[in-house]
Image 1: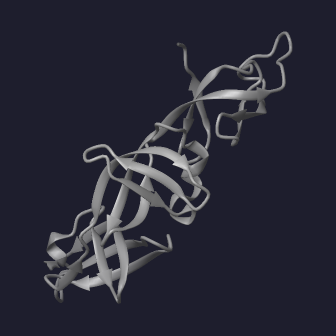
Image 2 (image 1 turned 180 degrees about the horizontal axis):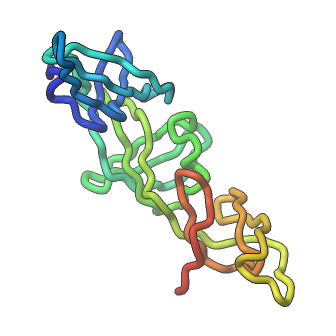
Length: 187
């Protein structure tokens, strides 16, 4: 148990039996009346974002969320198998928990798996990953980075937009949150 005065970004609360992550919070002390805490909460399992106001000093139930560094091993058809980098224990994370992150997971990739009572809640990927372009149409003479973009398929089979001058086999940096091309990586 904690009070609303102890809230921090990223803290996970249990409200009405559901897990909510604190996205933003603001302590407000109006000229008249008692102080209160205005929060923006994101549902851990649903992803839904809501605003909620608490009176200052009110007790709230916190959830014990264990965030572990894990390495992605393979997809076994029922889910994604990860290995804890500390004790080498393996864990299968369901596809719905992995979600869009599957577009950027290669064997051996590092990620953080958040767990509550032994159940995986969500996956935290690094902000960007380096991927190789496995297929894209060849560029034409005179194509420059400011001229436009073309579709390219990366190692995981996900398709991104890249500048016209990039070719198959080029390594690129991709934003895992938006799926956007960030730049070319020189070996």
